[in-house]
Image (cartoon, rainbow, N blue to C red; front, side, top):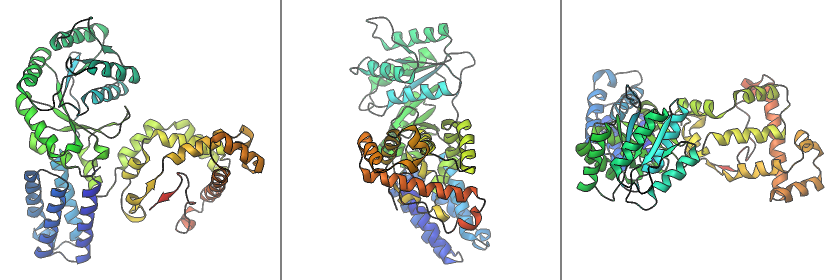
Length: 454
């Protein structure tokens, strides 16, 4: 996310650093480039105007122009203003004093409401809540069946109502009773959508709001639709009073205009972003972390949180011991790849790395994720003895392993070569000479994700 905007802003800052000393003239030129970059990222023009005015007012001051590192001062100002536009701080979900807390999930048809309802239910269950979901979309064929399938897949309960019950209000009230009686503290109501906003839809949503008194009305929007998503959110807010936004498909939106515009236009915070198709691909939105990513500073905090959630700590400690004692086997190598896969799409992990210094070219790295599956399949086709001691794998064993994993002998040879190089490298690391060797060492070609092209 934000890839295009990030790249253009970093180019502006590189040019500023090249100037050595800031002047009113080169600052004006930089502001023009920043304005163009924001507009090309599909940021709302009123938001762009306000942002540029705020940056200009602070950046053209005598203190900045005369600073020892004026370009760094400008980056700091842009960073601060981006955070303000995005919302200053994380906006957390609100909950009722007495359960159940009702969340209305609203939005246009095709925005991802039903999937987001499931993702949010899963996120709530992982964070100490006991959600119940209900679909009141009685118009779209199979809409309620879709949520039923999602609820089953995420292991959360769904209220289906009585047979033949097909009135949205009755379904919602029945679900609220069920929540209270079964000790469910959050009720997620997946509402009907339309291809466009109409009075019938809004009347139904307003009736649900009056009857259920929700603590959250979350508007779900497709980030890929850019300013159309912002306009729809604004219209829903004017007529319904939304309390927050969930932006879906942020992983596929390289521009980021909707995320940068939606709070300023609607006055309501961006609370969650969808960053993938899997049910765990929903993240709370952090304005400061988003600003860091836009400016190429990375998002290490989110990376650490993902790692803490996905990686087995006991296994990590044991792996560290094996590395130090040079006991790293092919089975350990396979387990490490499986742990990495739990962190999510590898491309999104690279996006969290700061694009500075030795990591500045990460944006150009293309990871072939299918290579991980191939490597795991090859190691799975080995016997326990072969995984423990790769030196015994002769020609006939290599042919058997290739056949069993659906790969070629060449693939097996490449893996064994990479593993041997990796083991040698890890031995060097654990030998306490990291500082001396780091600058000269390079990862073996293709390790551990296959070919990495940059």
